Image (cartoon, rainbow, N blue to C red):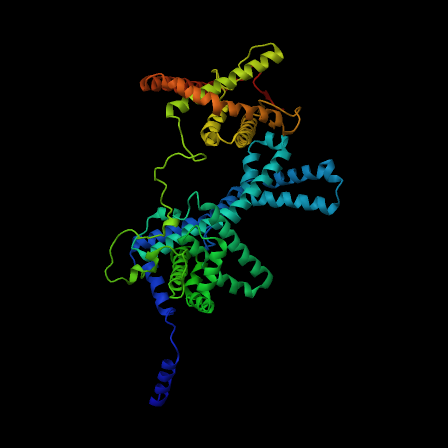
Length: 534
């Protein structure tokens, strides 16, 4: 090359104005060094975190979705799986109300059943493990499919998306210090911030999805524009959606193409995703660290100012660049209004704040008193209606555990709502509905027996729960919270702690002996205790 040509190229390079913020070579170097040159322990921790999140379907890695693999595995050897799906479809199509619908509607409903069944294979396998129950209650099986399908939808679109913030927090701290504790993935999640994290991440993914769906290629541009939202949220879980969106747009303004080029520059690494082991060991950790490095570069632009960017330590250089590297925790200096680590701060009890005024022995006594109250109620009810005294419990002793569990749950969970009687009443009904329905289902599924049936009652759900019963339980819950539980606690307080412990141990021992007897000789199946369903 001639000297004149070299001088021209040199002048051309000097003529181009360098970007004082964006240095692709440094970004690539720091992201690579952070991922792979901090020592094998740091690398292994990063791989473990990425593997965990990808396994539960949260990370960008598509190589290890454990739930999908498990779902496929358990159906691979199920010879009756297809027959079970056909049985549910035939049940739906055989219902009179379905036959009266148009053909397209009936076909759509049958298709929905098949889709839900194949999307939740483990549900079909679990319920079909009791063939008698499966054939006896196809309608309830379908309802369970619908319910679980809805829950999984909520988990995938709300919970999983929000969980990604924990991964981003880990990679952010991994840039700033030598080694990060695994528990740091939980840093953004606090009972006061979880609702906001879920909402902001839902809005973020909804916006990216709609832009990509409606506009195609411009959706990629939008994805880069909003790419910093999850990282802003990882730094400050209280940032609202509008502010997170505004900040991300401000950070990425003029840098979206450079971000794309930075991602593209590692294309030879991304190809390793095609190799399962190499992908999770190399490509995934590097991808996460590159995204984190770009966030810090854009965050620390001189013109970016926001009270929502609260971590002063994040303005520091990456650990891998520091000349004097010292081990230690990440130093964070958040603004006072965003302090999250106040869980252990002792404050006076306020109305509506969770507290527990009952000791462990009180909890034991409450359980057995509620068990006894339920037992007396059931025995008296049967005697009044049939004129015969019988043991109405599934165990041999004078206790019915579902009443003990329900009463204890109401007292411990709802005691803080004492000042809101209507709310306490309604929540008591909800807790009792869940417990009674779950207990009825479990007893029928395990023993093929019906221990109670409300099908003759007005407003019932599959005969397992009914409105009248829940109203009665609501009144009982008020009695338990306001009268029974405080009275039991006061009565126990009249005795020494040693005596209380001795009585609690005796009661628990007798209960354990009863359970062992049931395991050896079977549960109580005498008169008035359920009936085998044929």
